[in-house]
Length: 321
Image 1 (cartoon, rainbow, N blue to C red):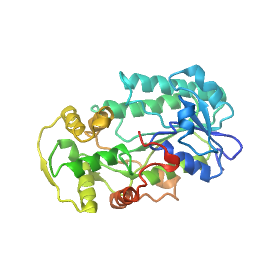
Image 2 (cartoon, helix red, strand yellow; image 1 turned 90 degrees about the vertical axis):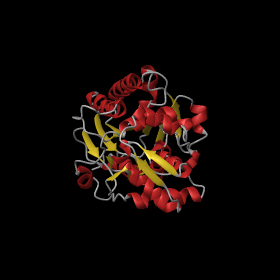
Image 3 (cartoon, one colour; image 1 turned 45 degrees about the vertical axis):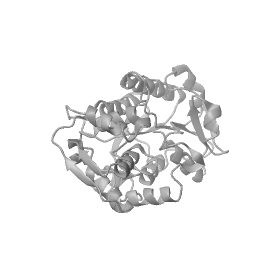
């Protein structure tokens, strides 16, 4: 039984012009579903999406603006991250999730599908970024609307922040002084597999809220991503490990090669001190038709897409998140 069997009812996507949203929207369209996208600036957003997509005005930080966009919606995707904003991103993420959950409950939404981050809730040293991702999921569940929270580690695809970090570092630095976080275990996942999980979350039978950990087939250190990318590109790179290089200093180092994404990159690096691996195999049971690939395949796909000039999302959605 499908949770959202009525193709005439719109599916709302909050965060449609972000990296994942720009790939999710056309995937939903291919299923013949009606897609409605929430946007603070509808005119600008409409240019980035297909002609069949409905774009409505709304801001997750403005509770009153969410009532009309959620009217008639059975399933809503929440792909909003506010790390790039100035100020306290944790409080803004908190408020946005409360607004969205409250409005969804009032509108009679049956399911929220949210993409968060992996990481152990019991880890006392969990980074602010990962703590915030988990807190958003908790707030959405507390709204009373059934929430499917998919937790992922680094997402690999052309234009994703994780992939762009690896690409920038490897392309520009023949010799890298490697901080300790490059040895932290992670379980990256290809962007196509993330989208598959998001789409197939529509088909889960109704029930209680749940957290589903998703990842590719490989558990590697972040340095393994650099080495695989270098291998794919035919680059010889020397990685020199040092015992101490704080996440904050790592962020400054990162700014040398990715200055346009320094703020978000610094938050991401702070999260790399925490292992982000799948500890629960419920995804395999819930989504038997999704077969995630390993890092070699994921990075190979990304490199091939870039070489074809296909690094942007379908409909030209800008990869910004």
